[in-house]
Image (cartoon, rainbow, N blue to C red; front, side, top):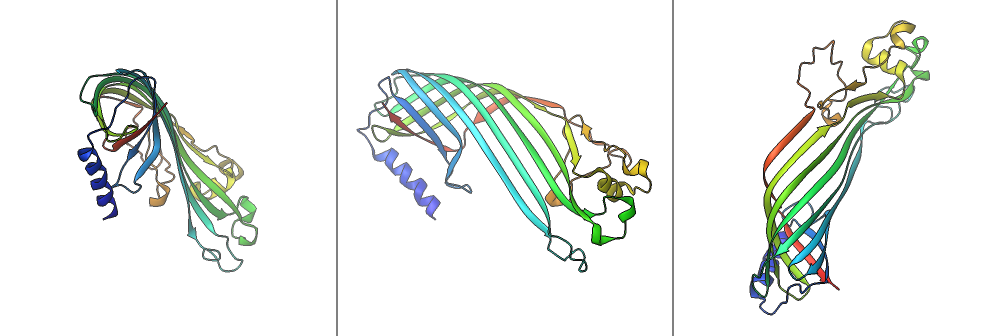
Length: 277
């Protein structure tokens, strides 16, 4: 209900205002996206800055920075083995995203309150995901079956990607005060995404081989992990998908290396901006 009332209030201001003045040239502008029906009313991941070179021309640049992480206990202390007391074991997930998108806008007459425009924007983004799971077990062949000397070790699965492209845009800003506006933006975009190598790592190679490969001699215990694969592979530690022996278990999925797209682009949020000298 609060989200609905918030949206109605914004719309009411936009409809009832009649005396607001749009940009005259020389102003600066900071803009964020409102998502009243999403998990967060304000999307602070991307912030756009504009500099109005004149009343009908503007340079723009958008900065995107996002990072999320979570830690989850999947074994409580003592749950794996009561005596000796086993440690708490965790899973971790993390995602990062950073990007920049410079562009240029040409504005048209519109009305006293409305400023429609066409624009062009190039963008570059890069992101990564890492999943981690902790295990407890022997890290020496002589310690198998002796939990009093077991150690905690971890397995990681990660991949990075990058995207770049060009968008041709149209939009409009509606000023309901001399400094504040709401707007929309859509257009046609071309983009490409490339996936970096999919990498598996471990903090203890011997412990990894004992658990996953049934190591029984120094050669198998010290065998190198198949740690790098070209292309995108699925993994989700929270669903139990953290490691595959891609060859022995018959992994047959195609690994996507890149993707290219041409189509509509649309900002589904409510754009809200503030002008200042």
